[in-house]
Length: 313
Ligand SMILES: [Zn+2]
Image (cartoon, rainbow, N blue to C red):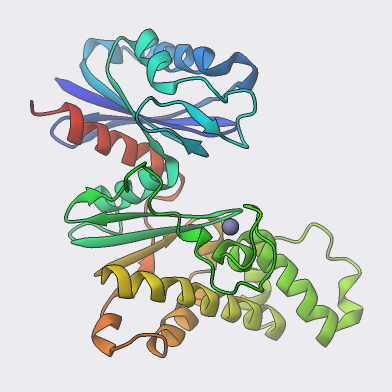
């Protein structure tokens, strides 16, 4: 049987997906990333996973790699990746090809996650699909007519860095008022603390280390400050989405990542707000849903992208 392998490289783990050329997931797995071992070590660990599970008996047509950070997709060189210090300058493409003996494609992990959702998750059967990942950072990917939109240099889909207010808070990228600076996980926590300080200053004492997950739990218990903050998050999300609606007219938008676990607490206000931000209501005929694949989205997507390139020729 002919197969492709998807590898999602994160700072602590690599997630793996072995996919048949007919599109069936054969196996999913997870192995540690040991940063000090570099790209070479990572590739060796992936190879060992294949051998240990006897997957080397399949005919491996090619490999897709998804990696966080700025990666040059042509030569697979890591330009910058905050989660993988020391990997800058190394070519994921060349090293993995050297170790696994197969051709390799490399893509940004958010783009891979979007393609995964399109191929086998929330975007299945859609035509123009946008996937937004809400977490520490805000990432995204865009699929048009079945193809991942990469742009001229591979950097398309940086949804999190659309500026929605030039005088807004500072963003990790060094500019002000990016969507990520409003709805990245730490921004939501900051917004909650500020709101609390205004409305219930006595409650701040024991909130060290609070997360968006906690805020969502408070909101589900009826805490008005938490509900309002997630509502604001939805409104900011809608401002980012309105740009995408006018530009792409998607039929489905999926929202994934840890912050999306707040679900309708964010999505419902986002849908409401969006109505007032669109040129015409026709543009609002879009399904805004939760992503479905969870933390495996990127590994699945890199495998499906590899399948597009390496299967059926
Ligand atoms: Zn930014």
